[in-house]
Image (cartoon, rainbow, N blue to C red; front, side, top):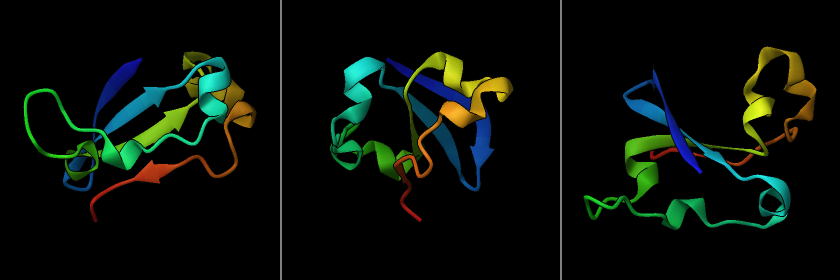
Length: 75
């Protein structure tokens, strides 16, 4: 699923990709995703962050996050 936060990151907003279960283990070409309403790649408009579950976003479960989760931005 896709979820975007309201907080800006520099000039970009964050787009959190929730890749549950086995999807989180698959090397996913985030940088190649395009938005449905434009021809821009998502990394050109958002700082992309991948997480294994919604629960991993809570402050109590930071240990469940991948040590170096893939993040992409155009800067």
